Length: 236
Ligand SMILES: N[C@@H](CCC(=O)N[C@@H](CS)C(=O)NCC(=O)O)C(=O)O
Image 1 (cartoon, rainbow, N blue to C red):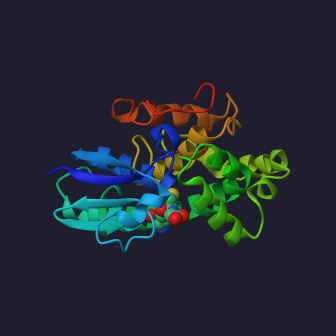
Image 2 (image 1 turned 135 degrees about the horizontal axis):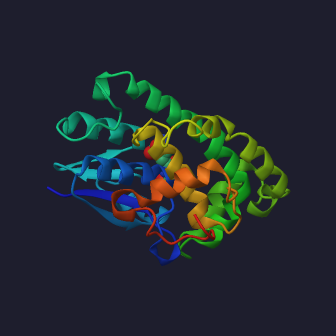
């Protein structure tokens, strides 16, 4: 049966959520048939019984499952005969906690710092129906206007790039963060970088950055699943 993925969509339907991209990669990695449902922030309340506050949400076997980490574990447990996201031992092996560590690290080292750089670009590329909600909710949460949040962003980008050095050293020695082939940790980091690639013209990776070559490999996976998406960056 086809799994439905409620996937955050901006103006022109572009899919930009790193939380949702993790799940698209996970579904493709497992070779599970799925369809995405383009979903705006203001549509989330109409999913299923209306109890979900965030996406991704998947609908499978008559149930709705929310939260990217819970969904990934659900897919791993429910479809054990498909390629594992976590490597040897699947959800019972050591790769599971390594993957969770990478997901948490990715939030703090990549996604949180990036928010202060690209939040206004995100706003600009949202469906007009979502813009008032996004501005009001984020300004209330952070206590600043979107414009104030992105102040001095060139300097913030320098700090952000420096924070990526653990990834560089890893990719000096191997093609993927997980070794010879990609696993969940690669999907977490790629998803985090697809977010700015889809939503801002500010180029965050240099052309000679080893991460650019790796991102190119990630974009070509699964018949260019992510590579075919609309983007704002030149090159990768
Ligand atoms: N921990 C959650 C976070 C999901 C999340 O924050 N999703 C955002 C979109 S990327 C969302 O749905 N936000 C709803 C809102 O701000 O109203 C996960 O990993 O799935």
